Amino acid sequence: MYNSLTEKDIQALKNIAGDANVLTGDEINPDFSHDELGGVSKMPDALVSVRTTEEISAIMKLAWERCIPVTVRGSGTGLVGSAVPVCGGILLETTKMNKILELDRDNLTVTVEPGVLLMELAAFAEENDFLYPPDPGEKSATIGGNISTNAGGMRAVKYGVTRDYVRALTVVMPNGEILKLGGKVAKNSSGYSLKDLVIGSEGTLCIITEAVLKLLPLPKVSVSLLVPFPDMKSAIEAVPRIFGSKITPTAIEYMSRDTILFAEDYLGKKFPDTKNDAYILLTFDGNTEYQVEEDMKAVADLCLSIGAIDAYIVDTEERKKSVWSARGAFLEAIKASTTEMDECDVVVPVNRVDEFIKFTHSLAKEMNVRIPSFGHAGDGNLHVYICRDTLSDADWENTLTICFDRMYKKADEFGGLVSGEHGIGFAKKEYLKKQYGDTPIRLMQGIKKVFDEKNILNPGKICF
Image (cartoon, rainbow, N blue to C red; front, side, top):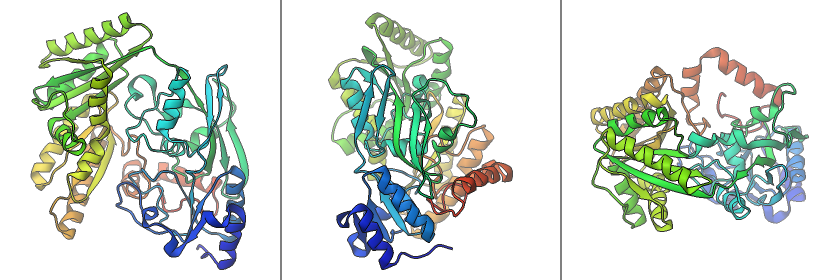
């Protein structure tokens, strides 16, 4: 189906991007064969570090004409194999496209290239008294990657997900054509929203080369609240009660004692409290101390009235850093605690979170395997990890198959979905097909065909 790269093709790529930006064979670091989780692996035939929209356009024209597969990669922090070139071909690395191009204070937007890191954008916005609300746990991910997976994160409870902050995109189509989708407008009912089709498409439809993102004024006050509970059931049951109080925290995270201890070992730092089995961590923000403190006090009192053991105010920079650095390290800490792991990134209705977590505990006991978890209690997005530890190759593969089948089936029973924010990529596509059925998958495949008739852009992902 696809053509292999020839010496002539390699020379053409070097003519476009420069000799130093095109690597082949043993010149390519093996890290480019996998993403952060590493469950899917394949080396590209050529690695091209791109710097401009025009370079990408020229490369895609060559790939289109020659029918060569192309996969786009940012920081490689994904967890489902979306940035792995499973069909070989060209791997386009966008990390050199890392400029913040414009801050438009009048329209409350910032224009960035796709290789800008989330932490760089967040810091830039804050320095200019703005907030970029999407806040996924992996701060070293690129904005292009966040858009491609419609990343959510901890502040989604109050502010929404990446899709809610993308005003416009510049993209390169598989045939090399450059398009601008959307604009610096707050409303748009002008036909199908092609921009929104691209968001969450994991690089299968086109290549994002520039994004106009919405900003908000920076809240003047932010305080966190750490609330220990005697068990996970009472911790999770507090969440709908909090929403029922008509107070919307910025974030509501749940965490277990085991996961916190992994983070302590990994970071070499102490968490404020590790005596209890379950915790919820909340953040409140606003423009006045009175407003934020009243909201926080009301939620603390509510939690204490329904069984919380205590409520710790996290208001100093030192305390905030201690708590949130531990929360941010959960993934790496769990990864460091085992020989290998895989993730189930499901989302379920908020009132079913406790049942799903209890199900994972019973499954862990049944399968005699560790299944730690953490996640966003406020929006039902759970990050559940199956740890290999000392399992043999055969036992590991069998355990993964059974655990994933059971967990995705349970999420479906609860009215949930296969992925809350990490995407489908290569690793989870069979579970997507099982959940959605023939007609939705056929519609997705039809959209893909309209964008990319030759199926050269990130083939083998999502629904193929």
